[in-house]
Image (cartoon, rainbow, N blue to C red; front, side, top):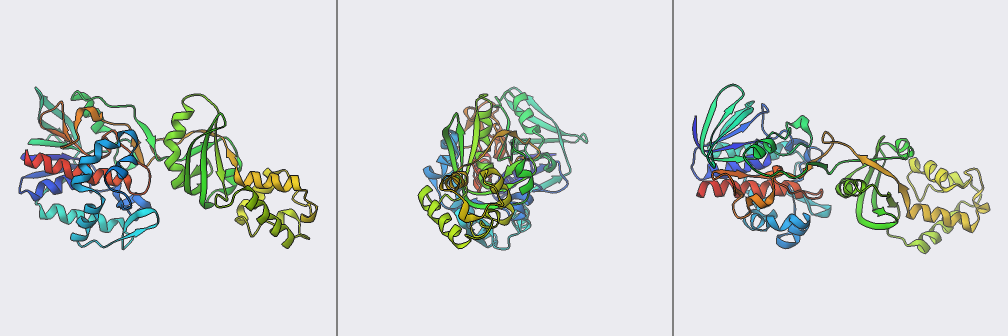
Length: 414
Protein backbone atom coordinates (compact mmCIF):
# COMPACT_ATOMS: atom_id res chain seq x y z
CA UNK A 1 0.00 0.00 0.00
CA UNK A 2 1.45 3.35 -1.09
CA UNK A 3 0.79 6.66 0.67
CA UNK A 4 2.14 10.18 0.61
CA UNK A 5 2.57 10.24 4.40
CA UNK A 6 2.52 7.41 6.94
CA UNK A 7 2.10 8.32 10.62
CA UNK A 8 2.98 5.71 13.25
CA UNK A 9 1.20 6.16 16.57
CA UNK A 10 -2.45 7.00 17.19
CA UNK A 11 -2.05 9.18 20.26
CA UNK A 12 -2.62 12.96 20.33
CA UNK A 13 0.59 13.82 18.44
CA UNK A 14 -0.02 11.21 15.76
CA UNK A 15 -3.68 12.13 15.33
CA UNK A 16 -3.03 15.85 14.94
CA UNK A 17 -0.11 15.17 12.57
CA UNK A 18 -2.17 12.85 10.36
CA UNK A 19 -5.16 15.20 10.44
CA UNK A 20 -3.07 18.21 9.46
CA UNK A 21 -1.45 16.27 6.61
CA UNK A 22 -4.86 15.00 5.49
CA UNK A 23 -6.17 18.58 5.30
CA UNK A 24 -3.71 19.26 2.50
CA UNK A 25 -5.34 16.66 0.28
CA UNK A 26 -2.53 14.13 0.46
CA UNK A 27 -3.01 10.39 0.88
CA UNK A 28 -2.29 9.75 4.57
CA UNK A 29 -2.35 6.62 6.71
CA UNK A 30 -2.34 6.50 10.52
CA UNK A 31 -1.06 3.25 12.00
CA UNK A 32 -1.94 2.32 15.61
CA UNK A 33 -1.17 -0.98 17.30
CA UNK A 34 -4.16 -0.69 19.66
CA UNK A 35 -7.54 -1.51 18.18
CA UNK A 36 -8.67 2.08 18.74
CA UNK A 37 -7.02 5.49 18.77
CA UNK A 38 -6.24 7.71 21.76
CA UNK A 39 -6.14 5.13 24.53
CA UNK A 40 -3.80 7.24 26.67
CA UNK A 41 -5.60 10.47 25.74
CA UNK A 42 -8.78 9.09 27.31
CA UNK A 43 -7.16 8.79 30.75
CA UNK A 44 -5.47 12.20 30.82
CA UNK A 45 -6.74 14.65 33.40
CA UNK A 46 -8.41 11.76 35.26
CA UNK A 47 -10.60 11.14 32.26
CA UNK A 48 -11.40 14.83 31.74
CA UNK A 49 -8.48 15.61 29.37
CA UNK A 50 -6.54 18.73 30.33
CA UNK A 51 -6.19 19.89 26.72
CA UNK A 52 -3.68 22.68 27.22
CA UNK A 53 -2.41 25.47 29.46
CA UNK A 54 -3.88 28.90 28.76
CA UNK A 55 -1.80 31.24 30.92
CA UNK A 56 1.40 31.28 28.91
CA UNK A 57 2.53 31.74 25.32
CA UNK A 58 5.87 32.06 23.55
CA UNK A 59 8.95 32.50 25.71
CA UNK A 60 7.08 32.24 29.02
CA UNK A 61 5.55 28.95 27.93
CA UNK A 62 8.89 27.60 26.68
CA UNK A 63 10.45 28.37 30.07
CA UNK A 64 8.06 25.88 31.68
CA UNK A 65 9.91 23.06 29.93
CA UNK A 66 13.31 23.86 31.40
CA UNK A 67 16.52 24.46 29.53
CA UNK A 68 15.35 22.49 26.46
CA UNK A 69 12.12 24.46 26.13
CA UNK A 70 13.49 26.94 23.58
CA UNK A 71 13.35 24.12 21.04
CA UNK A 72 9.56 24.51 21.07
CA UNK A 73 9.40 28.25 20.31
CA UNK A 74 8.73 27.84 16.59
CA UNK A 75 6.22 25.05 17.15
CA UNK A 76 4.38 27.26 19.64
CA UNK A 77 4.34 30.14 17.15
CA UNK A 78 2.70 27.85 14.59
CA UNK A 79 0.26 26.07 16.92
CA UNK A 80 0.41 27.38 20.48
CA UNK A 81 -2.20 27.15 23.25
CA UNK A 82 -4.45 29.91 21.88
CA UNK A 83 -4.55 28.29 18.44
CA UNK A 84 -5.17 24.88 20.02
CA UNK A 85 -8.24 26.19 21.84
CA UNK A 86 -9.45 27.89 18.65
CA UNK A 87 -8.86 24.65 16.75
CA UNK A 88 -11.06 22.62 19.11
CA UNK A 89 -13.71 25.34 19.16
CA UNK A 90 -13.84 25.16 15.33
CA UNK A 91 -14.39 21.43 15.68
CA UNK A 92 -17.43 22.26 17.85
CA UNK A 93 -15.80 21.25 21.13
CA UNK A 94 -16.61 23.84 23.78
CA UNK A 95 -13.84 24.40 26.32
CA UNK A 96 -13.49 25.99 29.75
CA UNK A 97 -10.53 27.30 31.71
CA UNK A 98 -10.08 26.34 35.35
CA UNK A 99 -7.70 27.25 38.17
CA UNK A 100 -4.09 27.49 37.09
CA UNK A 101 -4.97 28.07 33.44
CA UNK A 102 -5.95 24.45 32.84
CA UNK A 103 -8.17 24.07 29.79
CA UNK A 104 -10.74 21.24 29.71
CA UNK A 105 -13.64 20.29 27.48
CA UNK A 106 -16.80 21.89 28.86
CA UNK A 107 -18.32 18.40 29.13
CA UNK A 108 -15.45 17.14 31.34
CA UNK A 109 -15.21 14.12 29.02
CA UNK A 110 -11.94 13.13 27.35
CA UNK A 111 -14.05 11.01 25.02
CA UNK A 112 -15.49 14.19 23.48
CA UNK A 113 -11.95 15.37 22.65
CA UNK A 114 -11.17 12.07 20.93
CA UNK A 115 -14.49 12.15 19.08
CA UNK A 116 -13.84 15.52 17.42
CA UNK A 117 -10.29 14.46 16.57
CA UNK A 118 -11.57 11.30 14.93
CA UNK A 119 -13.98 13.41 12.88
CA UNK A 120 -11.03 15.63 11.94
CA UNK A 121 -9.24 12.58 10.54
CA UNK A 122 -12.36 11.54 8.63
CA UNK A 123 -12.69 14.93 6.97
CA UNK A 124 -9.08 14.66 5.82
CA UNK A 125 -9.79 11.16 4.46
CA UNK A 126 -7.00 9.71 6.62
CA UNK A 127 -6.84 5.91 6.40
CA UNK A 128 -6.73 4.40 9.89
CA UNK A 129 -5.08 1.04 10.44
CA UNK A 130 -6.09 0.05 13.99
CA UNK A 131 -4.76 -3.08 15.66
CA UNK A 132 -1.75 -3.02 13.31
CA UNK A 133 1.64 -3.16 15.04
CA UNK A 134 4.72 -2.10 13.12
CA UNK A 135 7.32 -4.86 13.03
CA UNK A 136 10.17 -3.23 11.15
CA UNK A 137 11.26 0.01 9.51
CA UNK A 138 13.35 -0.59 6.39
CA UNK A 139 15.98 2.00 5.53
CA UNK A 140 17.84 2.48 2.27
CA UNK A 141 20.67 4.96 2.46
CA UNK A 142 19.47 7.96 4.44
CA UNK A 143 15.79 7.38 3.67
CA UNK A 144 13.06 5.11 5.00
CA UNK A 145 12.04 2.83 2.16
CA UNK A 146 9.02 1.14 3.78
CA UNK A 147 7.63 -0.35 6.95
CA UNK A 148 6.34 -3.85 7.57
CA UNK A 149 3.55 -4.74 9.96
CA UNK A 150 3.47 -7.78 12.19
CA UNK A 151 0.86 -9.37 9.93
CA UNK A 152 3.28 -9.12 7.00
CA UNK A 153 1.70 -6.13 5.27
CA UNK A 154 4.11 -3.65 3.72
CA UNK A 155 3.46 0.10 3.82
CA UNK A 156 5.27 2.51 1.51
CA UNK A 157 5.19 6.28 1.79
CA UNK A 158 7.11 9.32 0.65
CA UNK A 159 7.30 10.70 4.22
CA UNK A 160 7.04 9.10 7.67
CA UNK A 161 6.13 10.58 11.05
CA UNK A 162 6.92 8.63 14.23
CA UNK A 163 4.66 9.65 17.12
CA UNK A 164 4.65 6.54 19.27
CA UNK A 165 5.20 8.20 22.66
CA UNK A 166 7.63 7.00 25.31
CA UNK A 167 7.47 4.20 27.88
CA UNK A 168 5.11 5.71 30.46
CA UNK A 169 1.88 3.87 31.23
CA UNK A 170 2.60 0.77 29.09
CA UNK A 171 -0.99 -0.46 29.45
CA UNK A 172 -1.90 2.26 26.95
CA UNK A 173 0.51 0.77 24.41
CA UNK A 174 3.53 2.97 25.21
CA UNK A 175 6.20 0.32 25.04
CA UNK A 176 9.08 2.42 23.70
CA UNK A 177 9.04 0.81 20.24
CA UNK A 178 9.47 4.13 18.46
CA UNK A 179 12.55 4.95 20.51
CA UNK A 180 14.12 1.65 19.48
CA UNK A 181 13.35 2.33 15.82
CA UNK A 182 14.85 5.81 16.12
CA UNK A 183 18.04 4.33 17.58
CA UNK A 184 18.18 1.69 14.84
CA UNK A 185 17.86 4.48 12.27
CA UNK A 186 20.93 6.18 13.76
CA UNK A 187 19.34 8.67 16.18
CA UNK A 188 20.72 9.26 19.66
CA UNK A 189 18.19 8.55 22.41
CA UNK A 190 18.82 10.15 25.79
CA UNK A 191 18.38 8.26 29.06
CA UNK A 192 14.74 7.36 29.69
CA UNK A 193 13.21 7.95 33.12
CA UNK A 194 9.65 7.92 34.47
CA UNK A 195 8.38 11.49 34.93
CA UNK A 196 5.33 12.98 36.62
CA UNK A 197 5.36 9.93 38.85
CA UNK A 198 4.45 9.26 42.53
CA UNK A 199 7.19 9.25 45.19
CA UNK A 200 7.92 6.46 47.68
CA UNK A 201 8.90 7.48 51.21
CA UNK A 202 10.60 5.83 54.18
CA UNK A 203 7.99 6.82 56.77
CA UNK A 204 5.05 4.49 57.44
CA UNK A 205 2.49 7.04 58.64
CA UNK A 206 1.38 8.17 55.13
CA UNK A 207 -0.20 4.72 54.72
CA UNK A 208 -2.66 5.60 57.52
CA UNK A 209 -3.60 8.72 55.53
CA UNK A 210 -4.17 6.87 52.26
CA UNK A 211 -6.71 8.76 50.14
CA UNK A 212 -6.39 12.06 52.04
CA UNK A 213 -5.89 15.11 49.82
CA UNK A 214 -4.27 18.28 51.10
CA UNK A 215 -4.90 21.40 48.99
CA UNK A 216 -2.94 24.66 48.82
CA UNK A 217 0.17 23.37 50.57
CA UNK A 218 3.81 24.17 49.86
CA UNK A 219 6.31 21.39 49.16
CA UNK A 220 10.08 21.93 49.36
CA UNK A 221 12.87 19.56 48.35
CA UNK A 222 15.85 19.84 50.70
CA UNK A 223 19.31 18.47 49.99
CA UNK A 224 21.66 18.58 52.97
CA UNK A 225 19.27 21.10 54.50
CA UNK A 226 19.31 23.46 51.50
CA UNK A 227 16.17 24.12 49.45
CA UNK A 228 16.53 22.82 45.89
CA UNK A 229 12.98 23.08 44.57
CA UNK A 230 9.62 24.37 45.74
CA UNK A 231 6.03 23.90 44.54
CA UNK A 232 2.56 24.93 45.67
CA UNK A 233 -0.59 22.90 45.12
CA UNK A 234 -2.38 19.66 45.88
CA UNK A 235 -0.92 16.51 47.47
CA UNK A 236 -2.44 13.06 47.97
CA UNK A 237 -1.26 10.44 50.47
CA UNK A 238 -0.96 6.83 49.32
CA UNK A 239 0.10 3.50 50.83
CA UNK A 240 3.60 3.86 49.32
CA UNK A 241 4.07 7.57 50.04
CA UNK A 242 2.77 10.65 48.22
CA UNK A 243 1.30 11.63 44.87
CA UNK A 244 -0.95 14.36 43.45
CA UNK A 245 -0.13 17.27 41.07
CA UNK A 246 2.43 19.01 43.28
CA UNK A 247 4.28 15.74 43.91
CA UNK A 248 4.28 14.72 40.26
CA UNK A 249 5.81 18.07 39.32
CA UNK A 250 8.77 17.61 41.68
CA UNK A 251 9.29 13.90 41.02
CA UNK A 252 11.94 14.26 38.30
CA UNK A 253 13.97 16.60 40.50
CA UNK A 254 13.68 14.18 43.44
CA UNK A 255 14.86 11.35 41.20
CA UNK A 256 17.87 13.34 40.02
CA UNK A 257 18.87 14.28 43.59
CA UNK A 258 18.44 10.72 44.86
CA UNK A 259 20.85 9.53 42.18
CA UNK A 260 23.52 11.75 43.76
CA UNK A 261 23.42 9.56 46.90
CA UNK A 262 23.03 12.51 49.28
CA UNK A 263 20.49 13.15 52.01
CA UNK A 264 17.16 14.30 50.59
CA UNK A 265 14.11 15.44 52.53
CA UNK A 266 10.67 16.62 51.41
CA UNK A 267 9.20 19.30 53.67
CA UNK A 268 5.46 20.03 53.67
CA UNK A 269 4.20 23.41 54.81
CA UNK A 270 0.58 22.70 55.66
CA UNK A 271 -0.20 26.40 56.23
CA UNK A 272 1.91 28.35 53.70
CA UNK A 273 -0.35 31.41 53.87
CA UNK A 274 0.60 31.94 57.53
CA UNK A 275 4.11 32.69 58.76
CA UNK A 276 5.37 31.12 61.99
CA UNK A 277 4.17 33.92 64.30
CA UNK A 278 0.76 34.25 62.65
CA UNK A 279 0.17 30.51 62.83
CA UNK A 280 1.29 30.48 66.46
CA UNK A 281 -1.29 33.18 67.27
CA UNK A 282 -3.95 31.24 65.39
CA UNK A 283 -3.23 28.13 67.45
CA UNK A 284 -3.31 30.18 70.65
CA UNK A 285 -6.83 31.31 69.74
CA UNK A 286 -7.88 27.73 69.10
CA UNK A 287 -6.32 26.62 72.38
CA UNK A 288 -8.24 29.34 74.21
CA UNK A 289 -11.43 28.18 72.53
CA UNK A 290 -10.80 24.54 73.46
CA UNK A 291 -8.84 25.12 76.69
CA UNK A 292 -10.70 22.44 78.64
CA UNK A 293 -10.44 19.79 75.93
CA UNK A 294 -7.72 17.21 75.48
CA UNK A 295 -5.02 18.15 72.98
CA UNK A 296 -6.07 15.39 70.57
CA UNK A 297 -9.55 16.98 70.37
CA UNK A 298 -8.42 20.59 69.90
CA UNK A 299 -7.21 20.65 66.28
CA UNK A 300 -10.49 20.15 64.42
CA UNK A 301 -10.64 23.78 63.22
CA UNK A 302 -7.07 23.60 61.90
CA UNK A 303 -6.58 20.19 60.28
CA UNK A 304 -8.52 17.44 58.49
CA UNK A 305 -9.79 14.90 61.00
CA UNK A 306 -7.78 12.06 59.44
CA UNK A 307 -4.53 14.00 59.85
CA UNK A 308 -4.98 15.00 63.49
CA UNK A 309 -3.91 11.69 65.03
CA UNK A 310 -0.70 11.67 62.96
CA UNK A 311 0.17 15.29 63.87
CA UNK A 312 -0.48 14.63 67.57
CA UNK A 313 1.81 11.61 67.44
CA UNK A 314 4.60 13.39 65.52
CA UNK A 315 4.43 16.46 67.77
CA UNK A 316 5.50 14.42 70.79
CA UNK A 317 2.77 16.09 72.86
CA UNK A 318 0.63 13.79 75.00
CA UNK A 319 -2.75 13.66 73.26
CA UNK A 320 -4.54 13.17 76.59
CA UNK A 321 -3.08 16.39 77.95
CA UNK A 322 -5.54 19.22 78.57
CA UNK A 323 -4.98 22.13 76.19
CA UNK A 324 -4.48 24.70 78.98
CA UNK A 325 -1.58 22.56 80.26
CA UNK A 326 0.40 22.71 77.01
CA UNK A 327 3.58 24.74 77.37
CA UNK A 328 4.78 27.46 75.02
CA UNK A 329 7.66 25.25 73.91
CA UNK A 330 5.25 22.43 73.04
CA UNK A 331 2.95 24.78 71.15
CA UNK A 332 5.82 26.18 69.13
CA UNK A 333 7.01 22.65 68.41
CA UNK A 334 3.55 22.03 66.93
CA UNK A 335 3.81 25.17 64.80
CA UNK A 336 7.22 24.08 63.52
CA UNK A 337 5.80 20.67 62.61
CA UNK A 338 2.90 22.18 60.66
CA UNK A 339 5.30 24.47 58.80
CA UNK A 340 7.79 21.69 58.07
CA UNK A 341 6.31 18.19 58.09
CA UNK A 342 9.19 16.07 56.79
CA UNK A 343 9.24 12.96 54.64
CA UNK A 344 12.22 10.94 53.43
CA UNK A 345 11.96 9.96 49.74
CA UNK A 346 13.41 6.56 48.88
CA UNK A 347 12.60 6.40 45.18
CA UNK A 348 10.06 6.87 42.42
CA UNK A 349 7.45 4.47 41.15
CA UNK A 350 8.13 3.05 37.69
CA UNK A 351 6.96 3.66 34.13
CA UNK A 352 3.74 1.78 34.84
CA UNK A 353 2.68 4.60 37.19
CA UNK A 354 4.30 7.51 35.34
CA UNK A 355 2.27 9.96 33.28
CA UNK A 356 5.07 10.74 30.84
CA UNK A 357 8.61 9.76 29.90
CA UNK A 358 11.62 11.96 30.55
CA UNK A 359 14.19 11.53 27.78
CA UNK A 360 13.83 10.56 24.14
CA UNK A 361 15.16 11.35 20.69
CA UNK A 362 17.91 13.97 20.98
CA UNK A 363 16.79 17.49 20.07
CA UNK A 364 20.14 18.08 18.38
CA UNK A 365 19.06 15.70 15.63
CA UNK A 366 15.64 17.24 14.95
CA UNK A 367 14.98 20.47 13.04
CA UNK A 368 12.92 22.66 15.39
CA UNK A 369 11.39 24.53 12.41
CA UNK A 370 9.91 21.37 10.85
CA UNK A 371 10.28 18.41 13.27
CA UNK A 372 12.26 16.74 10.50
CA UNK A 373 15.08 14.35 11.29
CA UNK A 374 18.55 15.66 10.52
CA UNK A 375 19.69 12.10 9.86
CA UNK A 376 16.89 10.47 7.86
CA UNK A 377 15.75 12.52 4.88
CA UNK A 378 12.04 11.62 4.93
CA UNK A 379 11.41 11.17 8.67
CA UNK A 380 9.69 13.46 11.21
CA UNK A 381 9.09 13.11 14.96
CA UNK A 382 6.25 14.37 17.13
CA UNK A 383 5.10 14.15 20.73
CA UNK A 384 6.49 12.34 23.74
CA UNK A 385 9.09 10.43 21.74
CA UNK A 386 11.10 13.69 21.63
CA UNK A 387 13.39 14.55 24.56
CA UNK A 388 10.99 17.10 26.07
CA UNK A 389 8.63 17.03 29.04
CA UNK A 390 6.84 19.57 31.18
CA UNK A 391 4.88 19.89 34.43
CA UNK A 392 1.26 18.90 34.97
CA UNK A 393 -1.44 21.25 33.80
CA UNK A 394 -1.78 20.65 30.05
CA UNK A 395 1.86 21.33 29.21
CA UNK A 396 2.64 17.85 27.89
CA UNK A 397 -0.41 17.59 25.67
CA UNK A 398 0.60 20.99 24.28
CA UNK A 399 3.91 19.43 23.19
CA UNK A 400 1.91 16.79 21.32
CA UNK A 401 -0.40 19.30 19.62
CA UNK A 402 2.37 21.72 18.64
CA UNK A 403 4.96 19.22 17.40
CA UNK A 404 2.35 16.96 15.79
CA UNK A 405 0.70 19.82 13.90
CA UNK A 406 4.09 21.16 12.78
CA UNK A 407 5.28 17.72 11.66
CA UNK A 408 2.11 17.10 9.66
CA UNK A 409 2.27 20.53 8.04
CA UNK A 410 6.00 20.31 7.26
CA UNK A 411 5.77 16.82 5.78
CA UNK A 412 2.88 17.97 3.56
CA UNK A 413 4.66 21.10 2.29
CA UNK A 414 7.93 19.35 1.55
